Length: 234
Image (spheres, rainbow, N blue to C red):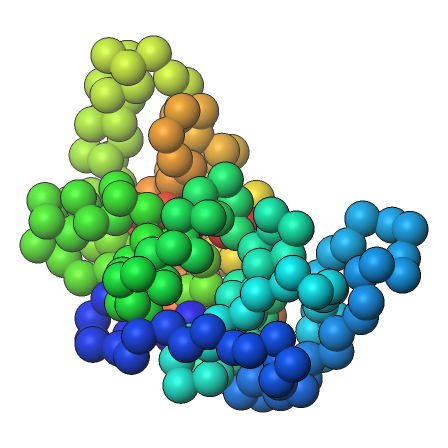
């Protein structure tokens, strides 16, 4: 999804696709459908470069998003989200709230669907800090107020951790090509939390530096940012 595809602009209503007219291309993605009734294995959707292999049967449903550059496909209670995001072909399976996301796209339109992919904590951080989120794939970043040091961040989060009963790592670290929150997003810079934060609601870290990813442009973060993993793992 593009950065505008998270609720910053008005979008068209999601468009349901008649089953006999499933496309062979969506944006830069080439779609190859296979008959899931003729395989013994659990049907899965896969991506190899720009080719997306997708299961289908007589009950499979599909809707277009982003002027037919992206799509949702609903097959046997599983939903995949795919298409073209800027220069990248992507495919991701939606998680436990997948049916809500599908219904949101159909009933409330694209803008509401894309907003549903943004963790609620990101909206809270934007409001609290007066910042605008940045995004790289499924990772979101919110800038802490100007002048905030990593040492102040460390002290604050240790206090929150003590009250809330979750654990944090003990120091800021200088890192190079570090797998941020265990994903393919690689940080060169400073990170506070050298592992997944044990918080029951969401995963985050506090970082500064440059975040790279093989399928996205590098993202330069000047000053401390809270990095939050979105609703799809990477």
